[in-house]
Amino acid sequence: MFAPQPSMFENGQFQKPENQLLSSILEQRRNWKTLESGEAIWSRTLEAALIEGLQHYQPTPSKETVMLGRFPRRNQFVSRYIWKKTGQMRTPKQVGSRIQQLRETYKGQEWQKLLFPTPQTVVTECPPTEPSAPPHVIIVIDISRTAESAEVHEGPLRPWAESPNVIHVSRRPRPLASIDPTVTFVSASPICAESHFSVQVGDLVVHSECTPLVLRSQWGVAQDHSSSGILCSSALVPQYWGTLLECRDPTQCRIFHQVAAADGAIIFSAEYMFNFSD
Image (cartoon, rainbow, N blue to C red; front, side, top):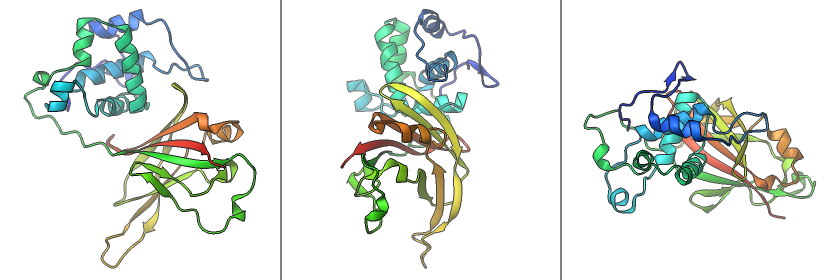
């Protein structure tokens, strides 16, 4: 939930912060890792949104929070906050990594209070309830090192679950060039949403983009309507797919994917991993 805080943004632009903590962090920062395009991974605008997201985050009183100092879904909350404020996506994993870096760099009391908020700081008003985040799914794309066409194999490609949150796209490896980079899923009702992607190699974000979610057709209509839904699809990193095809080892790349509705709510979250299995 959101606690009232002065915003560091106006018309989507970063403003000089009045917050002393943020000013200190930005002034002391010396290293700015960049993408291939030269854009900073954590620019001043994104750093400001991260700090502001942490200031807005309020933990729900629970045994896990009070006794263990853990804050479930905090990274997801801040990730969603950054996207709402800046229109740029940073995944919960990227948020957690940046928080850890800041934790090791800044030791001030104010920063520690921000990292370890207590349930007593929760506001007494009843702000809008944040919708629960969807489960994060890992999707494994098994690929072949050979250029053999997948057409020589008989039978359809059927996904299979390694565990509840780990799904393999097919039971056999395929050449990456033979794979149709289209993500398809079923929605219970028509939605207006966008797919936000970021490609990460190690801890470095090398690419990010946004693509529209396309409503294809009605799917699986049963007489009792129990299996009906709307078929939706989105191209998987269309601006970067050609680079992946030329990559010697795609298994070094991970693709993070969030589908955000028009109101900013995250309705789908996944991580795509490539795996050589031949």
